Amino acid sequence: MVEGSGQREAEEKQRARNVLWTLLVVIFVAGLSEERTPGPWLLFVSTVLFAVLQNFLPFYWYRLDSDLRAYRRSRWMNAGIVFLAPVAIPVYLLRSRERGRRLRALLCCLGYAFLLMLAAGLGMFAGTITQAA
Image 1 (cartoon, rainbow, N blue to C red):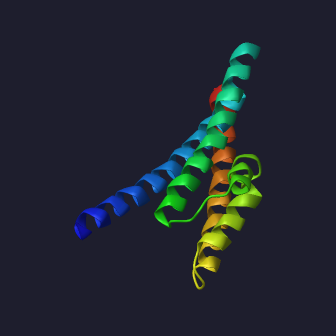
Image 2: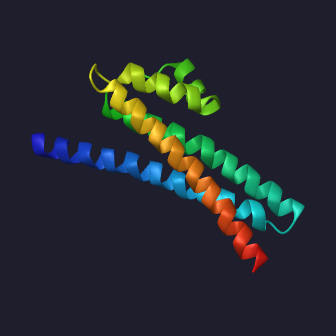
């Protein structure tokens, strides 16, 4: 029974990591498509799709992570993750991590934010290069 719960916990952690990787790919593709969208209707559809994904994936990660840590999600924190993720996620990390792990969690969050900006920039750069070719 203990082995099964440990395996389930490992699967949940892997699922949370996969959500973060998926968000990186979505950000890259959003940057790539920004330069390559052929018409206004497709631009509108892709913008809405990427906006939904960019709001859903951080919330899904938050749900998985808070379930793993048995953190009770409040209505305000849920709304904050959806509408103000750059502010709410560090607040969540400070509240959900035990003492001694908070700084590491914040540094990982900062590193991941840098990766998101890098993915968006590389996507836009790749879109510009392929459009020029």
